[in-house]
Image (cartoon, rainbow, N blue to C red; front, top):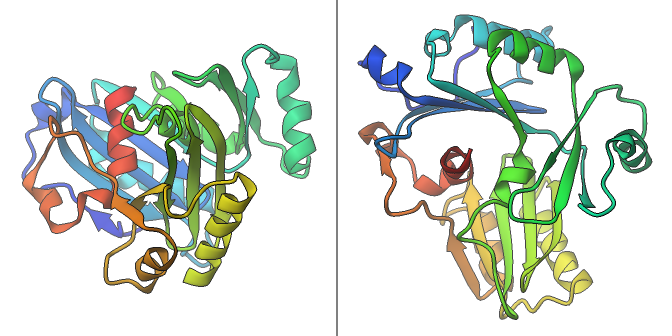
Length: 283
């Protein structure tokens, strides 16, 4: 079985506590993560994250099947299960023009028709628009078999549900989620969402180039915009120092003060996993 690259699940677990908790799963093009959240106690019990693309000779589907079959925590009958798809084939449509028949043509115009995935759609909570997205059909079928009563969302939809990051007036905010070779931005200007998009990168210079291009495109001031950063990034990294060169207001993403983290999380900064943890609070 694949080894988790982040394993924050205590060895000694109360099985009844697990059964009374929620399971939130994130599955994307390269990673599979899950977090265990006890809703009544507003407490996070554990988290695991796997890479799906580092096993020679095995497909991502085979790796995913291996994980959900053999990870002992995932054999628990949780109180609720939520699956969050983090695939980049996603489009937002205004609520007033949305129709289910538009899902295929809109997706294929933007992303092409080479991939024959399953098309899903959902209303974006707190915004007058819908998210139309495409996921691998075989992965959706596998997760449906394993979590038959699961609820399904898209990562971008829940990212926009963060009540702490909904600017008003003339506020400007860029929210970033960093991965090893990809980052996601949600760009706000006043009470309007301007952009939600993922970018691949190889060097810190690539990241700053994209961010500066976004500022130029949407007439956003580098001096005034608040850059809220989460994901796999540290203050000592060259990438973080690169951000400080161009932006005056850089801050780490934070969890609400009312949320508790088990001691097993103490090894890592909370901003490493804050986007996924916050999503558990709103599903």
